[in-house]
Image (cartoon, rainbow, N blue to C red; front, side, top):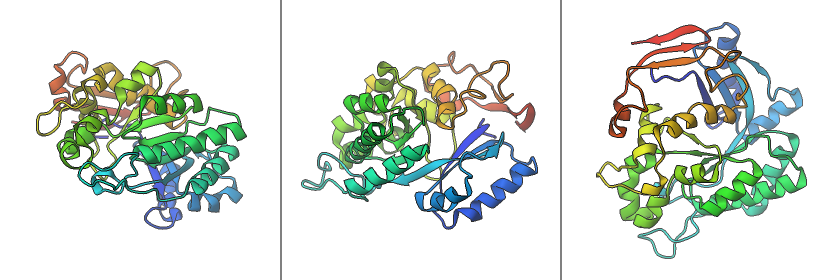
Length: 317
């Protein structure tokens, strides 16, 4: 709330043990009216399979909802565990590897897609994204529908042609925009080289292709922040002061849309949040400056003055 959030996604209940351990407090807080933000929960496939017989997918109230599944197909590029189509910059002959075979990836995605579940998939490297996109294409062919709000989480290196195929399947990329700021210099020198680093987090390509995308910071990898993330997507300047991918920069309004109107799609909330309109939740954030009026280099310095969730003040500076 201090950072201006009124809705959040918990991506991957079950990573740290039984999902039930984390579901119970969420449900208790929601039932008691003590949640100060709206929680959208995604479970690992193994944990979701325990709940499917109970029919609880999509169950919840205005402050908590059980969403779809979230799982992983590769690791991180800066850990040399992301699956790439081309060699790592300083490790000739090494591309990383997928965590699953193509057949296993197909099986998981087709299964949940045809059950009508949203599927969010962690993909950092472009090889991981390619395998997952292929699986979604097979799933849509098997069970034709593009309205489930499937997501590629991170999708660091997706090409324009991959984005076009994602758009055709109704897949939303969620980009880790601060990667350029925090690790951009190391990516250019060690992991990817300057050319591929400039391609990372291609929000500009999403805009040009007319497809929705969201932004995130992958907490706890980085601290919760929307304004810092929007700053990174607008400026694309590394900690070392290098501009990586000027053609992938977006406007402050487009960055704001990624955290509001587009983000609402990711939790199936486009009908009740993400815009200030009659009939939607009274969820607002009051900033000390106009994000479209300040110099883009100062977006991260904007302060949250007040956060309101459901018409109730949940944070005030």
